Amino acid sequence: MKIFSLDLTKIQYLVVLIYLVFAINPYLRINSFIWYSISLLTFIILMFININSFRLNFYHLWFIVFLLVQVLSLFWARDVDVSLPTIMSTISRGMLLIPIVGFVNNSIQLIKIVKLFIFASIINLIILLTQINLSSIGDIELGVHLTGGIWAANSIGLWAATVVLTIFLINSKLEWSLSSIFVVIFQFIFAIVVLITGSRGSLLLLILGFLFIGLNRNRKHFIFNVTKSLILVILLFYLSINVPLLNGIIGFRVVNLFNNIVYGNQLDSSSQVRIQMIKYGLEWISKSPFLGYGINNFRILYNQISGIEVYSHSNYIELLIGIGLIGTFVYYSIFVKIFKFTAKKSQFYENGLPIYLPMLIAILFLDIYVITYNIFEIQFIIAIAFVSYRIANKKYQESI
Image 1 (cartoon, one colour):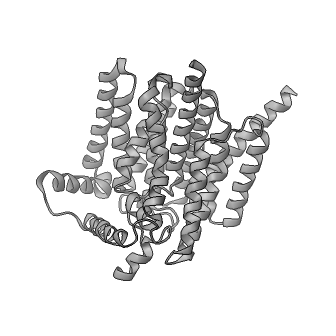
Image 2 (spheres, rainbow, N blue to C red):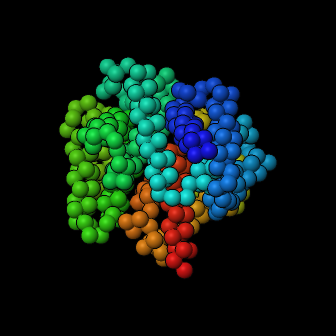
């Protein structure tokens, strides 16, 4: 029986790995039938193996209510056809995240899941590099133009930034069988990927993530951790500005943004468009504040005045337009739940803080500039952060 149980455990983690490889890579999700089949099979297998250890919790309630709000928004959506893919994407994410949050109840299981995410990311990095013309990097950013319109620069950048920060955040806990040099090499490659996407939002996540991780790590090594984070941030700036290939993709954007903030120079055209989108969004929200216009329907409203169907580039505006104040409150309630517990009982977390909590803080800032509610990697972070909270809460309950 023990051998059989061990085999089931191996099957379980193999299923998680396969799901993660597909979830990260849009190339592999082109065939919707295959992707949804893998998602459903993942859910069935994980629930079957872990049915005895699975426990419903606040995350599941949050996920169901958030999904329900999206579904209900179909009744008043301006265009149902653009809402349905977003809802299906939410459901497919739940096929992995719901079981994981329900059965992972100790730090050993948690770290295994995180290691699988990093391993799946390395597999996808290799796939990505074989799919693009590497000689074209430098002439154009790594995004839709190099991936055949399949993988957007923001999506690649946010994924790569998440991997870099994950390794940086929990490297001491991973107990890698490979050498630390090997891990650092891949971390550096993913950091370069962030830069060559030209995505300022992804660079912002990386910078904020480094800073918040440095500020929130073990208090005994506070100065060392902050210094290390600052060095990494300065290194990113230096590379993006002084390496010709990177300067042509993202360096000049960073310089322009800095000049805009410090000297009040005129914003570049991209930033002007984003600010204009926020202004339009606030105007539309005032006309339907509680329910919105249907999930993912900002693009429909914006198309009516600009002739261009595009998302808002702000998670707050996108959610407020899509599902109103009610749905937006539901979405961010998971952050409140985790932060509230952490503020009162942080001593029950390993090393004083939950895995990914600093990145959750960074995400709240990032949401001003980037849409994250439908990005798998960001939702994975939220789920893992909640699992860490559950483990800490279990320790707290046992101490009473």
